[in-house]
Length: 488
Image 1 (tube, rainbow, N blue to C red):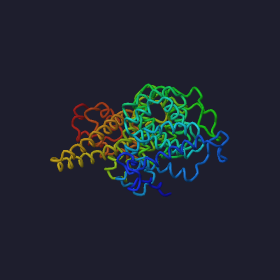
Image 2: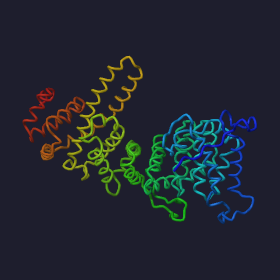
Image 3: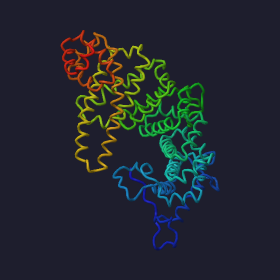
Image 4: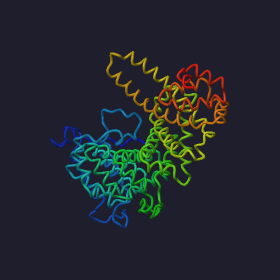
């Protein structure tokens, strides 16, 4: 599908002063589009193509082209988007002059009329998209956010049955939540609207639109990061019904949603098509584990947390940081790995009696944890080399330090989980790990190197079990790590 046509420009033949600010866009043309938009939702004479309620169900081609031209003004002429036509309204903001012009002529009020009266999904999508682009500017965002009526109407769009409209609505909300001056206004507004929880859960649990799932996930992630009280409310939610998405094929009432199963379902949808989306949903799970109620919501699910553990276990052992990947892959996957391992660590610490946490089933996980540590050692060596090469470049040192910071977080989480798991190993588990190749002198040395001295007790406990399973290997490790032999 070709991109929307470029908006008409003011030229020398047009009336002087017709340009919008310092742009080449025509005030007269833009005003005429807004005027015709009002006529579409409130026609002076009955339109045979209109629905019984009075608003047209479909846009005529000319009106759609013109309103798309307004939307297309969000394209920054100095940015090359290549063939990515979806970048319109997604990667740049309405030029300031155009945004101010739309604000001056009460475009948000006109759009609110569209949201309230239009039966045309395409028109609603475009108007939400334009409004979202206007919200990229702080003053306009503040004006939009403080309009309580508009705010309520926009939240109602989350209950729409049209995926493109939901996507633009989510982008608008994320834009507002990302501006500190108005974020609390939206958090409070969402907290006071129970239907938002149900509509978001409905999207996460039922949508197959990856772009929509990623954007909704970003909204939830931002909300939880901004407000722990709201996160706690959503964790405890699911006991009351709310009106669901509007549409002929949508149920009038939604089931009692629980947040964790909805997050897992969305994660499964995005895992293979969108690594960034998977990162977002794993971080949401990690945020849940920062409060006791969140951990309990995971491990006290009807399946006892088995689905969560199985998904995360599979990601670590089968998809991320695999043996045939280059060590540098850990740099690319460090944030999602840190989130996943943090959740696994919280679950392991709170539910060691669950069958899925039994060590006989998790020897591959120990092997994966050690492999992550091995890959990080390779990255640390590379970072040291890069640091030496760029000692005179301030930017280079900053980048390296940032990489080190994120890798350190991953290493700390990985070591904590590994130490807890090693303490639970029996002789039988250890023999199985040796047989499967997850444990050998090389991997054990890597584990000890990273765990000592902080997790000395765990290493010592494991070494005692290892001595029963393989005396020679235990002796060799003691020689490599003399501090262990002293305490034997």
